[in-house]
Length: 503
Ligand SMILES: C[S@@+](CC[C@H](N)C(=O)[O-])C[C@H]1O[C@@H](n2cnc3c(N)ncnc32)[C@H](O)[C@@H]1O
Image 1: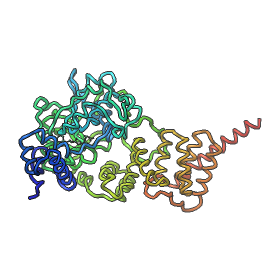
Image 2: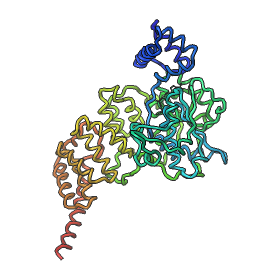
Image 3: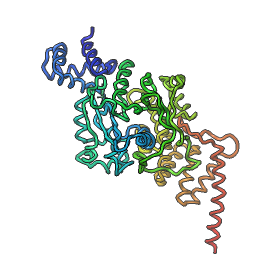
Image 4: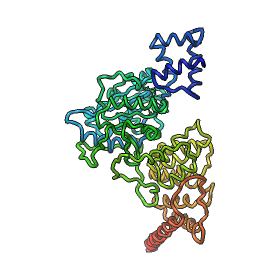
């Protein structure tokens, strides 16, 4: 038996953590380091120590947990929460009671504080009365950090600077959370495999349990779900990370789909189809402060804002969505076919360190993020790609288009010109460049570029659009149609201008 085996068994039995593969290596390193620090003769002596001393056991666990987190992670889930789930729960709640929300596996606090910020943005006057926020984690060290509320810039990688500046003040190299907001979250030690929170049994309306289940095997996941169900109210809602939800449909909760996202409800009663909203959210667009104008030309992905929640009872649907190991080509095809929930879930399997094709995954993710109006994330991803290759056409195009959608036309024009410089036949870039010039009032400049689009596209088969991977869905014939329409209008506008000048 390996010297690590007793540690692996103990940690799995007490905390559920599965320490195989890379995690086993981490365990080995941690044990060597701790034994050296404590001047112990070997792993056996340390094993005897952690059996007797809970603090030493916790110290080891702290070294083994993965605490990766950041503010407004998966913002579309927070958006669904604010716009749909919370108003529905408020409508059902007894008067004078607050909704109780738990962030289970909260790490250093970015998740529960993001919820506190989003709730405060949506219900600025009433958030304190309407919501009670709790957050628990196994790892004492991260809880200490959470209680301090001090973060480095890395935690803000997807949060709009305006929100960061509203709720944090800069301090040295990092940021300190506003004291009032900090008071809104109560942190406590929580082992989900063995929760000792008797006061909280049956109390939570909503539980965020995101990016934790990946460290457990199926049996442990099921046990943890049963424990969570005990903590929740009869119709409580459980939210997992979007890439883990479908693999956690283990018969404990009911899987529900709403607006292309999945979550779980306790019990079998689906929430009412339409409910009155006693308290309307003021607004909540935490990571997408600027919304691009709706227009036929820019909307390439469809969303169904009016769709109702529906129970997912078809097991074939679940197994289709949980197929592992899709290739980039398959994910791209899912995007083209508008199967966005599946594309997002599959893309989440690619991380910078795990996949040689991460840059392609990042490009598709940037494209989806941009189309979801999450410009911060889209820019962050394309900037990483452009850092590797400053002239990558697909990444440049996504960057330019997101500038355009945010009405930053000067920046968009500059980047569209770069695309054209590298790939002169990239007709989508010519077309959008003309659009930017037209919106900015440079009618002559716009006409010139529309004429170029016509030259590229008119007369027979259109050339390739120049993208290596981007699932750009607008057809050449549609762009040509729009170009002709703009040319007609521009011609009329320019001749009126000339008439005025000659008078
Ligand atoms: C990757 S972080 C996720 C943080 C946050 N929920 C998010 O999505 O950004 C996973 C957290 O789960 C915690 N965790 C792992 N096993 C746990 C258990 N048995 N009980 C409670 N927390 C646990 C870890 O300590 C870690 O902080």
